[in-house]
Image (cartoon, rainbow, N blue to C red; front, side, top):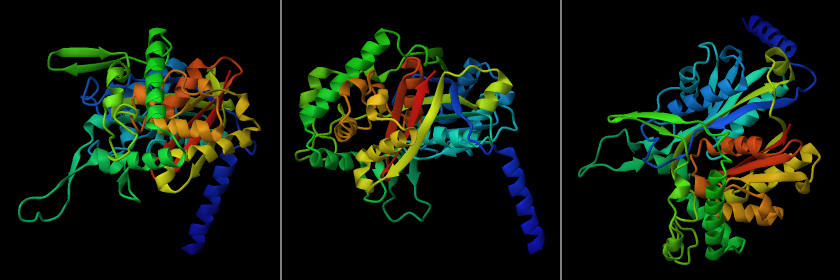
Length: 411
């Protein structure tokens, strides 16, 4: 039996080797799109994450011009999976009209989930294990349930736990909110409340200006939401229009009461949305005749002490640039996820970046932060706004002290 098992393993390994090229294939983004980002418990709340994901996947495949039958596998980031049903990514793939034989895997790397999904798909394509894949992310923070422990309740009742907080916004190692961790970063790197408020206002103004100029129009696909009174078509991000700049200075700290600097205004918000990209390698392009929009050049991860998660992107970015043989000056546009204003400011400071090249159309503070989606949104936006020949780098920190980064080149 042992010999038979060993023989089977050798045969499987040999078959896998034959299916993968010895020379790494180049990886390309063929299409990239996203849903509008809905505010918490607002327009998109009736739709759970897999449904939102299916809308993004279907639109990305349609825009690519590739047959749904050609898609060989799907990776979708998704953090708050409780009460969405088994295999959320698989649900999204099937509802999007992909073939029943298409495997799909759900990726949870908290805020970097969408980036990690992109990276894992890129690895499979570079190895020529797959030729055409879909990668992205999805989240419905509006539908995160409350938890009740599976135990005999004590006298006087039992306690509900907010799944949104417990599995999305709480540092599990230190048992404190991510905002408390970010407050430590603000202190250690000398980033004031004034700095953060100014950055947040800039983010909101940039997003509003970008929508006014139709900069997001090509990447956003409308979502039809059915309700008792009929249906609504959601086609614009909701969050950036809900800001009152006159209240910024009067808001109380959200996480650390005494001398705290992070408020509801300079932090990202709770949101719903999904994003998807069709990726292909050289053979995939040859087989389908698809025209690529951008090339995935390099990608990487990093990890630090969980409490310092905000600055984890620094080493990930440095690694990605080193792998590509580029300097930071070679990158035209940067998308650094704005989990908090201090997150973006700390990374700009430590990497010594030109602020005028970072999040030029706003970020998660103003557009919103559906945590499983956001990483993929960063790449998607770069794909649409870079000019031919320009490099763009997307990076996101994530809970647990991690970070991911992806470098692309517009074709």
